Length: 202
Image 1 (cartoon, rainbow, N blue to C red):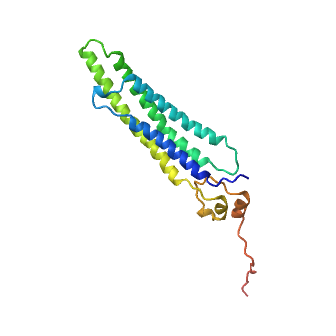
Image 2 (image 1 turned 90 degrees about the horizontal axis):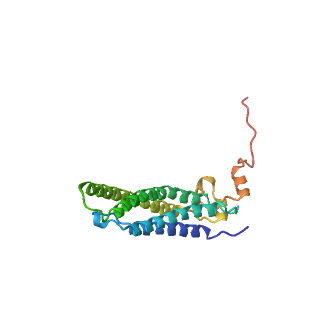
Image 3 (image 1 turned 135 degrees about the vertical axis):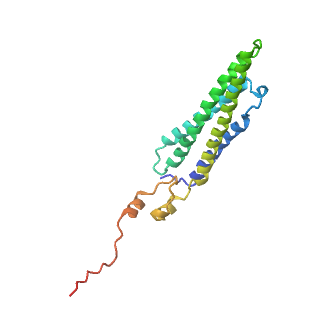
């Protein structure tokens, strides 16, 4: 059997690193307060590509662990964390695509002759961009919070210590499964060394 001591720490590092990547993207996305602050189409497209890569990385992290058939590891808590983070990450991608669509509209008509209708359309597009990018910030913060909070809770109690703990004392978010023999002992009924015969009333 492989010695997985320290694996929990490695999993925590990966969770924190992934959170850092999402947080870096979040800080790089600004919410415009005026039309002149809207990112250009190239910058916006690059940021969406970065976000898409990060979402894909979440699925890659899940797949990597789901295919790990090592019986000495219980990676379900880590997998669950990455899948939970994928939900707000997916929402962020959806919101950013809507913003990018409106940025594309502004880019398409950037040099069109001014008119009242176009001015209104540009203003409407700006409000959509603003609202969607605000939502992206909220979504990405949720991703970061999910990854970091679960990384903080991930348990790395060594397997030998885990086996010695009572059922009620065992952490539910450990990456180490309980050895089969320990599980059997834990489930076995408790028997007294001496069981006195029942006394009958006379």
